[in-house]
Amino acid sequence: MANMSLKKNPMPEQAPGVRNKNFFEVTTGYTAEMAIDEAQRCLNCKNKPCMTGCPVAVKIPEFISLVAKGEFEAAYEKITETNALPAVCGRVCPQEKQCESKCVRGIKGEPVAIGRLERFVADWHMANGEDKLTEPQKNGKKVAVVGSGPSGLTAAGDLAKLGYDVTVYEAFHTAGGVLMYGIPEFRLPKTIVQTEIDKLKSIGVKIETNTIIGKTILIDELLENMGFDAVYIGSGAGLPSFLGIEGESLNGVYSANEFLTRINLMKGYRFPEYDTPVYVGKNVAVFGGGNVAMDAARSAKRLGAENVYIIYRRGKEELPARVEEVFHAEEEGVEFLLLQNPTKFIGDENGWLTGVEVISMELGEPDASGRRRPVTIEGSEHIIEIDTAVVSIGQTPNPLIKKTTKGLETNKRGCIVADENGATSKAFVYAGGDVVTGAATVILAMGAGKTAAMAIHKELTTKGE
Image (cartoon, rainbow, N blue to C red; front, side, top):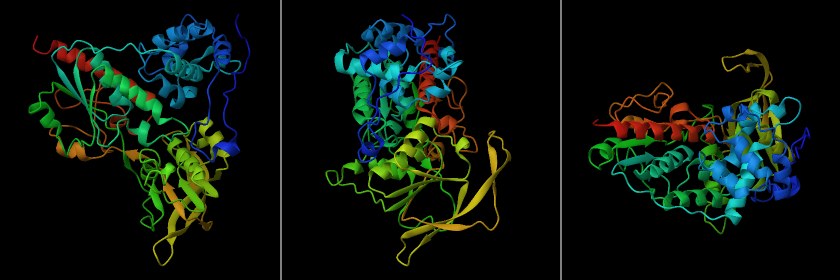
């Protein structure tokens, strides 16, 4: 029977005053009964508008129809026909801007909770299903993948299934890229990421960690000396941007990359069990308004900060973070100081941060991004006392690969130039994800990896014909 409720089934979650003191997952997931009930809200539209919003073309109405009938394992098999990381996507994808934004049920009410159902199906499979994975027969060709984030993992998995001998090169000591070092445990448990990586290994993907492409090995060496037929660069955008203001080198000022990497990948939140202390003072300010800023602010709260501020130069409507993440941050006690822009950091005689001077802003006319441009209010400077600052205003690709690879074209932002299939200016070298677009979403990076994998397959299949 169809469920014509205008509202989604609410997602169970920890109480705000409890979860802001631990790193356990905030949302606990649908029960089977809730999932079936929510799936029955789907109208199973013939033209499938929801699929037009999915970068990896998940067969959304088909998997939801199976959930509605209680056929959860079949639903998992349907999702994984095109999406290798459903447990990840169900948690961190901005469904409200992608598949769910196209859902017909959203016209007169709330859309079907596609992301929550995807997460339920993936979690159900992990708890109850069995992976029957076998290594495909090799086709005699080798592909190197640079970076083990969502784009690299997706490309590696798709290529391995087509019979390629795939090796993934990862600079860190643990595979997973931003899924491991950037997204906090309370949003994406690391065991889930590791499970997905282990599945890739079981179909023959090799992963070499502690290998910096551009330093340990060059792209040209992969192609000329190591026998690889093609290279896919999915190394992300891991070079942090800074404010460029006075005092930014004071003790107590972090980039969001360092702050979250210490907490996530180096397990600083489990100090002293893991010997990675993360300095967090009494008053923490996070500069920026995206999802990374929300992650940093919510992590600081969990590490014991009494006051945590998001300082952002635009208003609440202009925050680029997901509405859900902003809402959760507010619930957990993060304070939003909007229409404020930092002008300089202030420190003591020992070089430790003690405050930040900010100036108030007002919104003027829209800029090129469509958001109203912030304009300074002269004479409104004032000081906020803080002892920890986290700068989260964006990232760009590391220039190492650009500097060490002959014939690889990049743009003025340092991003690799690639066409719609991921092909670069260098023969047999493809690229995708954040290293091409700049910082974007997990699912867009996965879509780029999937597209490039098929383009590589097409080129290598026709090579020499």
